[in-house]
Image (cartoon, rainbow, N blue to C red; front, side, top):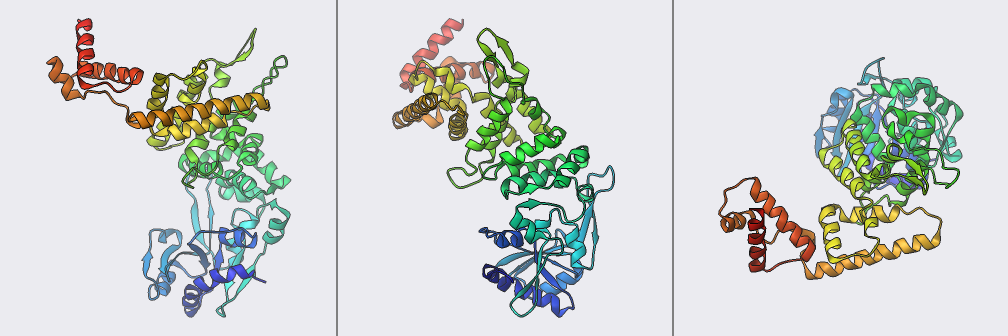
Length: 467
């Protein structure tokens, strides 16, 4: 019996199903939409995935007369996209994907039966389909017990996990997302297969690994998935620095495990930002923020210390993110957040106006993320310490707000531009102009906005002193 909430999906998909059946083919709603609706989850996706025994040319011929638009970028992989009734569809020929040994790209072959297609899906909870029957209803197809596994909160593969992960090693990483995002428990065979086959992830491109890992990082509670990756050894294949953070606890000073703390900070960061978008960069910064601690760890008379771990960590962050093929913008943003994540704590004696300006200037557009990261970095169970940190953060934000009303705090710049500097000092373009602007910027940060006459006077003094 198809749940009532599925009827809207069936109604939207019926025109495409009717068109395919008219050509002698069968059509099925498939994918995460089936899983989520059967699991009682709200699904706000507008697109619908269908699978069929029709080949791509036949799919295209069937949908072209009824579609507002058709796109064929995925045709060689068996997928035709179309817009029907304002709803986007991806219609794919039954298929199986597998990697040849040593290959980084999957081979695609077509199949004629729905069971064959579903057998090559990643997990049983995704290996379910609903056939469009042509009478406004649908028939659930569940050859591998996906509904039962969904109700039991169990994560299994349709075929043996060794075969499934050999067909596409990225599924081992995807398992972490389903463990965390769907609160599923992996069965013992799946865990054993990941432990035994982790090295096979090396044939998957860095871009695919990065994209799948990012999906894990923005589920509401990613920790179960992150621990799965660490405990199975899969994390070592693409992010080996993480395992090094699992340092031994200092038996004298009882310093908490760095990795446990790090995962707690990731979880503290909201999975959505203030605008309701995935909070991916702040979550990544939380994951990387203490990456430099193992290399800087020392035990002295006052206990464990990690001096300058933010500097070392920023370099390590840049290197790892580049290896995973993140965009330059992503690399720079996360690296800067890691570098600045301790800045707040350097002003333990109180915030001068200059300190507030410098904090805002150095954070730039990343200021909201830096403040959130700083707040979330507090994982102490000591309520007094946590309350004190929160109070100081509140005070900082109040100071920022107050200065914003007085100054253009979000656009701190020298009080004179480069052209004015060259005219005042009678110098040509060159490195000296940059030095002068940096001096003026430091004045602006320390003292706030200066009147033009005062800025010119101070620049002349600097020029004379410079000789």
